[in-house]
Image (cartoon, rainbow, N blue to C red; front, side, top):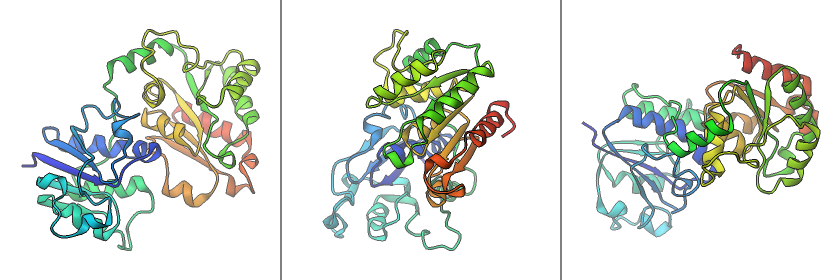
Length: 324
């Protein structure tokens, strides 16, 4: 019987952390009574920060200190990672063979390692599929990624207050870290107008550095909501990724660029239209949405601006109707 589980990684920034959420939920479903420990060997993980409330109840412990493989000298054989502790099951999610040896020192029972399978001919390209393979190997084919159900009560209450039941909400997240990943704002505005004409409610998600775009959207599509900016709930301590993920659970569909907000909408359970720049990255870093449509600019020409609004609208209609 598996009573203790260790997941070994190098750490997670926001995109990595969001992509791994269905794996975490599937792990908890497979081992509902086990104590699940997560080691971020390079110390930093969003599960200790912005996503702490999201993984509550799924991860019991974070291991961030000690010679756990984050530094080259940690691989010396006399070092004792994880404080010398042993676990019934260790799943090594990273692909460096030397660090895999560090992870294996924590295994008292089964050890499953991405590093040991990364050179297999059938090793998946997509990160989500790699994690699914590891979970399957660790559970003799019984475990699989599942949607993560948010348990944070204040976040759920905030989302209900901001997007009350009744209307059909469609999320639009125009932001991205790099300008080259952004579908033009005017295209999102046109999509929002079509959403409103259909009788649905457009819901914009803008980051803290996108106040100018938020103001343009408010002026050009006055019926659209911006729940993160115009708080009407009593749970203002809930914000950032936790709030976006909670709100995503109330959307009929969402549209986003290849960036963090898209992964947040997917993590919250929203059917997602993902607008990608190039085919290779769209495969490897595919959002972990239950229902996913993707449009790739590379298929139409050069630059995100070549993605046609009509194609995006058609894909969005399929998602909202449940046809996709």
